[in-house]
Image (tube, rainbow, N blue to C red; front, side, top):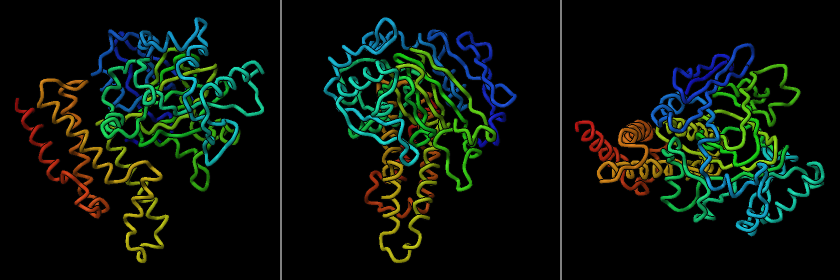
Length: 411
């Protein structure tokens, strides 16, 4: 992943002659950045998205045409593009949802509480009636695993462009978690400056309402750090207005879907009462960035407890526990993650039915897994793991991947 010294040095793919993409020019400093607005689903292929945005790690904005058929665009929303309280309460009213207080800062984030959805909706309606003010502060429903809790609710279709989704494929396979979320919040609710988990990609679709995105490409966030190396909580703070890079600013309308690339820091505001559906995802294009992040986080954990290195018998395992606690995954699980994704692709290439987005992309995935697996096997901290916990052994998995890729390349 490239490092930039300023926002103006970012290289973006030009829109070219594709009739499906219309350039949207935004200013950063004195030079324009270009984000593509993809208008026509019938004129924009997965291969083009793969080349121009996944591999290039560049953002884009899909028009409302891409979500027009979703049931949530009809049932969750009134005719005047407002949340349909009656329907939401009837179907989801008893759900327990995580709610953040946007008016309180807690470790560069907002503290959360769990509330029944009907209580949050009652608050939200009262908040609107009071001119978007409340003694409880500005509350924002965030990171609700609605899809997991209501698996029978077919409220949106996964666009093919986001179908190579290793994170959710993995969590579905082990049946523990997912990275599919619903967000709901009043005008004025917002998310502080951050980059997404595991340096994942994300996509976010506005079911109703409008959002304002402030986006910084990888490396630009370093120019915003304070003297202690800490990132800002709010990039719109007055103290940051006279130095550092200016963000790429994107206004996302109802129905539109934004693609946020790997490692791009961002801050997001709801300009109206808004509902959105969000996914985080990793695939062959950014799995190396995920591996790099895990190494950085483990190094940070090792520095934190370095004084006990010679006196703690299980010091290396303790560092892996810290890594898992802070990052959500340790080295052993990262290997299991690669193993499950690889085995799914080996099985698909050997069977009668292929996984989307197609055989060439499955082979691409396996090549990228091979690249990262070799780095993992050569890593000193990975070599310290108990080999009995790794099944199959990494060398055996690597051999199986190489056999299928070599055979398919000969066909």
